[in-house]
Length: 337
Image (cartoon, rainbow, N blue to C red):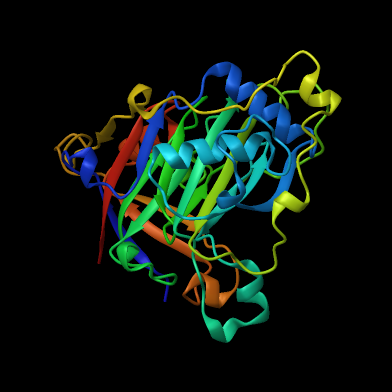
């Protein structure tokens, strides 16, 4: 049987009660450009997963040797968040990709030792660096009632949080939380509610200066904190970023470390709560709308035989407004039938 969930647009919930945190203004515009340039020096559109040990960073030194521009920046964020986790797995993307609903896990352990079960990171993060005018694809978080227990297979979803990309925005969430990225942004919805009925974007070769590289650019650093290192990684201190490369020094200038702003200068993003009666038909009754999201990975990772998560929003207009917003963080409750 298909997994069916009723998605209800709800009344106000205090921001502090959400399991996720969203902050704006974590890095200056110049710092975001410097971080993006550092990443781009490693790969044209992406950087594969790397692992850093924060204990190797010397905060009194201006030397970047061994840890890299990016890793100094990420460590500065985690210090502001008082995150004690010593290991940070990070990677970078410079494009808007459709990603099915999934949890981040220790990929090598899951592949080579499935009997060990799925191991999730301590916390997950998305740092949005440079976002094109038409790159409106949000990160969608799916909270479950078992997130606090770090359950890597639960589909007991209780809430959906839609976080649009913004330059300098930081998203932080529990490491076992389900998340996804739609492209097009309304691909979860049926045609009658403005969506594509599950038709998603197919990646194609980018050309310098085209719309994919400019208007639809979605440059993000994704990083997870771990209390113990995930399997199969060599520490990135053995493979330092090319800090002195031409890509880093030409026109940008990275004479010192790129650090985040003090947390007192960050702006906690306000979360808009879609109310159950905010949208409805002419009689004021909720207009149910299907929300269908692909599930990533094999059966063990999905936690179900089903390949799609199917739910029902209490309003197609409300769900479309949340998924289509270019700035507002929106929270929606989910209840199971």
